Amino acid sequence: MSDSTLPKHANHLHQDTARVSAEAAQAALHRTGARTIGRRAFLTGAAGLTLPLPFLEILTPRAHAAGAGPRFYLAWHQGQGTQWNEWATPGTGETDFRMGRILEPVAAHRSRMLFLRGIDNKVKNLATGNGHESSQTTCMTCQPNGAGPSFDQVLSQRIRKPGQRASLNLGVGRSARMRFYAGAGDRIESQGDPRKVLTSVFAGSTQSGAELTKLLARRKSVLDAVRANMTSFRGRLGSSDRARLDQHTDKLRELETRFMQQSATATTCGSPQLKLPATFNPALDHAASAEAQIEILAMAFACNLTPVGTVEFTDDHDPAVFSGFSQGFSDWHDMCHQGESRRNIGGLIAGYRWYAERFATLLARFAAVQVDGGSLLDQTCIQWTCDFGYGAGHNGLSVQTAIAGSLGPNVKMGRMLSFADPEKLWSAAPWALNNLYLTIMRAFGQPDDMFGRAVTGGRSGPITAV
Image 1 (spheres, one colour):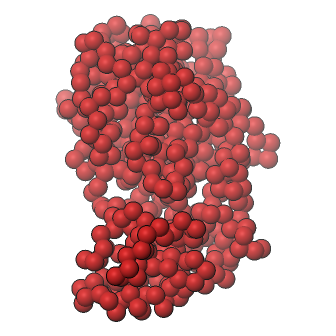
Image 2 (cartoon, one colour):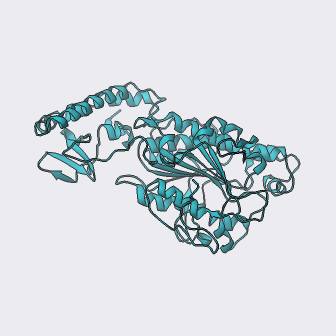
């Protein structure tokens, strides 16, 4: 096995160790002998290896600090609404809400979630097409008929860094162009086959963690590679900066050693280990596909390949996996339509709960991945949403919405905020998806006052109660 077989991300001492890139040094600080990329500084050694430097008084690199806003955003989208009486229902205060049967799978992550009732997709009323089409074209764009980029793409343009891909758009089910837009009328394909995603994003790597460890063990330590420049650079620093640099190199040596000892179940950046059945069919094996896409996303974020991802269930109109839930109804869609007037339909609750089980898998995996001294969940804003509220309503009112992970240090999770009663099916709420996206924008340090199309009677700005 040659070093050329190593996927780009696998040299993942990552931001804490080596950068192996032809673009690694764009400008020189001649006084120090260091090089910079934006506000990150590096020392260059043999064979183009570069070593990132810590915060020094002589330099001002930027690092993610504990308690800062999220670094990553993920939109997790399902269709066909929910059953509000078995979702999250209010208690006497924000923190004593009840999680119904649908949400039981995510109960262990209650403290990491923020549930919102009464967020309308008001722009839907300006769109053409049937109830599903008008919802799909507006729920992420807040523009009628998809007349603009979706929120994920706008955010990606703002927060991604040089070398990162714009976004990772994944599907569970068949590949499809549904809810996400690069621009007006330009739908993005959500890739439903995780094997193809692995090939395109991770260079098709099937190497185990043990193989990667052996390969990296044969590579020269990045600290050794930059030793000469390190000695020269250190001699030009003041005493306080020398102390910081010494602490930094000690930490890097520790990280190098730790990385070499990681196994195939690494909890930091690594090659995704997909567990797909031999007869895997992405159009049918939705549970296996969802788990694989979650693993790919976790590693794509941990390896800093992209700051934005999306997952949509592309066969949600009538998923083949839901045939066992029909219980006398012609199909899943027919059962969803009955949910407005009938309660406690066992198959309907089971179907919505199936989505919650997949979401619980996502949260557990992100919580297990460690990046920059915290979990990936700590540093990701995950938006769990849907086309509308009730499957039968198709009206864009009280869209199912929850946020998991982080909205920044000033937003307390483990709460439920209720702005409208979704049991009143045709009553408009004060807040809309436009406002929700502005709220998320603020978490990422973006000062926008408008997203999408303004709607008469709608409020402006982010959701103040959050």
